[in-house]
Figure (tube, rainbow, N blue to C red):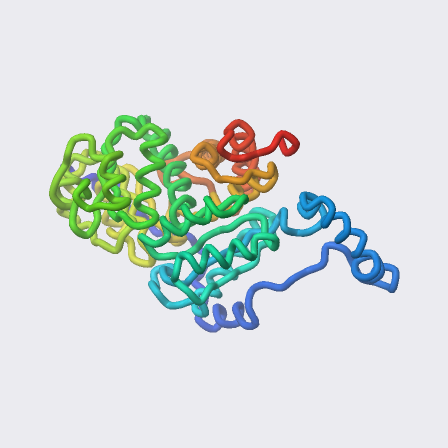
Length: 405
């Protein structure tokens, strides 16, 4: 294909925010990033008598008689447990629960800042699915939802499924579904910017781990007709077994075989969710003006400046280039909306509603380098929460009771 020399990623499109120093980073984490606060003050003996003994006994008696009152008179209705076993942390891999805790604290900070939700990090010193499920079942009275974070594939699929079955509250593995929601919103933005339809695109997803599987599935659910998924062995097919066999049955309608070069020849969209490099010579064989979403961190599959020589739209997972595919656009509003209406499940319709809401906010300022809104746009989380709440009300699978509607 012809290279478009005018398409360059100039420095003025990158963020002007200076990179933090190592000293700043460690100083900001000293003592942890979280602390508890009070929703009602303790100023005198009367306040103490209301908040603690003897007044608190009245509330405890009421909840003992009617357990549903815990939603109103404790913080469980607004508390998300951020749970990890430390086996797939950022790009660091299996670093263990203690080393994962700063990331989980950061996730809790994002829940509070962007969704107005309290959350508590729980890092578990086990990778046994049975033990994790049992732990969270026993802790269920203490929280209202579970955000699974940084759990390695393929175990993350079984863990999420088991927890959804065992708990009567929203459960979502953000590495899977948060990524998928924002990716779909970004593709909608790219399509709107370039006048294309999602259903017309040939899409290649490179990476069949947690994020790759969820992204492929949400794209198919949203109307994409031609999605091909690659892993380190090439295009996945039914012979792989397990969840990859299930995914093979839902994708690759043209029966593509081979490796990345075979899958990407003539493709309209590249979605990178692995550490595999996308060579420029393979990128050049894609259809004219493709979308290149090189989402691996910290090193994208192809440098954005190289991708911009060929692509109409370029996105990354990084904050120092335009079009960052950032999960913070999704998960605070998704959990907020689910908890607002007392949903017991986060369903596919709720995820699609979240993606549509993110895209709707982006439409006010849509451009090739602005296909998703800024994470700091104050409209995002409320719009996502409202859309998710409405979808939950309309979806029987979400488990919203008549009184919560």
